[in-house]
Length: 339
Image 1 (spheres, one colour):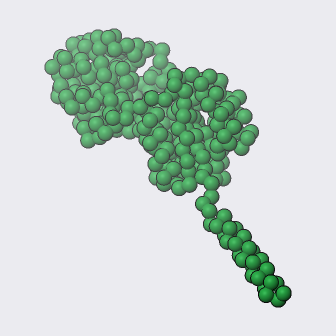
Image 2 (cartoon, one colour):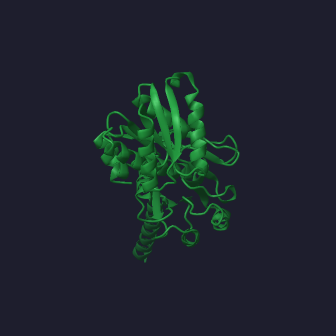
Image 3 (cartoon, helix red, strand yellow):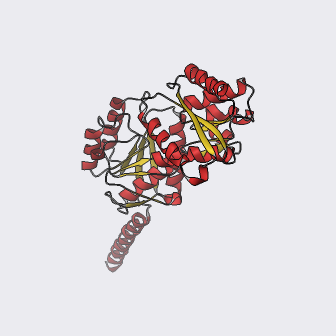
């Protein structure tokens, strides 16, 4: 009888030890990952594929973060609304979105925030009521200044230049041109002279004709600034066709995939556009800061964006990452594979 009691006692001790061991294993188990969804304008877009790479870089740096990369097959607000509704059901921790419509997505974004999901918009903004923060790739001041800086570097601070813009009604282009003109008034740019501003309406043929017109009407022209991806390609082709490579330089805002050949030809030494890898990285890092309770929205709030430093929000919860990124012979091929 005593032996039986001893055996039962030993079994009980073993069971308790086993339960304790299970509890210890559960305690040692890795915590659940923070799930951040990146909702882009459409899938198959090289710009957003590069932003996805940045998001993955941020996740790897932070640790314990899972990235859900998604978007509609064609850019539509309806497609993004459907996707965000699904993400709410999946109870993700944060949604980072480049909005196809700033207002149409607000109701579903509000629903997400009411469920405790942090919502950050980047690149293309959501209206303020639909997000905690908007991360712009840059701002008008930085974009305008950057283009004058590049032209000045190409001309060693002296020479005639012209601007080939999109349409005369393009709000963002006109703001950038205004900044460029103001920047040219600074003493360090006294040797540069803006001789003309023309408009190609973001049409390849018209932009090309306008560029040819500039080259023939202004024989002393040394640089063309095109703050439009269509215009910069057209101007580069015009310079090459007129046999002016090395005599007239083109700069402005362009896509690496479209500009790589013009950089190699010498028509373009450098151009700029925002770096989508950095943009995706920063937006993801900021989203994690909000999830972790380390960031607040509001005028003057400072949000860490990891290796890129920190950004300060304005009264609308918006901020800019920094100046447009410079592309040249040293890096254009690398980025041309992405967008």
